[in-house]
Amino acid sequence: MDIQDFILQGEGNEQDKREAWDYFQQAYERQMKGELEEAVTLYKRSIETHPTAEAHTFLGWTYSFMGKLDEAIEECHHAIAMDPEFGNPYNDIGAYLIEQNKFDEAIPWFERALQAKRYESPAFPHLNLGRVYERKGQWDQAIDSYKKALTLNPDYALAKRALGRLIGLLN
Image (cartoon, rainbow, N blue to C red; front, side):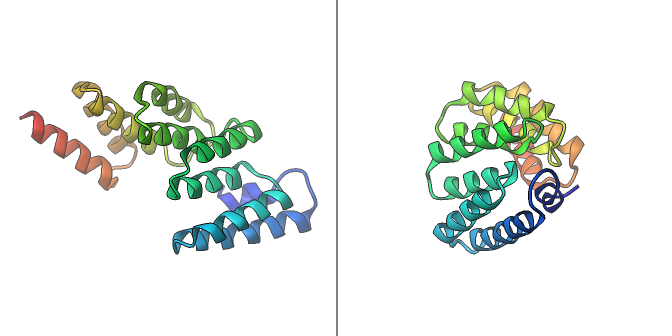
């Protein structure tokens, strides 16, 4: 099931859900073009029209692009409150905590992302755990995490590079 399906399902007026989906799509397009203020406005409109965990998570992601990590984390908490089974906001909180050099605080968020029932990219938290362990000098755990990411997604370029780089440093 994709994001559109989740936005259009559940309680609420069908017209509102479709309008929220349209705002969400426009916001994502603006975000990808680097038009971040416009993306924020459109994600907020989507949330006001029909709130979803996805819109809160993507609004948080946009805030992270703007360097507003506390706001990004807050949006992820809103997403989790709406749908605790959605894995993305857990991983995103952990990633934002890495950016704040809060490595120990990040670990439980990645572990929660791995436990989420609805998460299409479980390789991401494994990669991020590897990043944390690498920064903490826990090389074996970092290597294991990168390998787990690659087991889940053999084409995951970031995990391949991280694993190769770390193994190269240790040899």
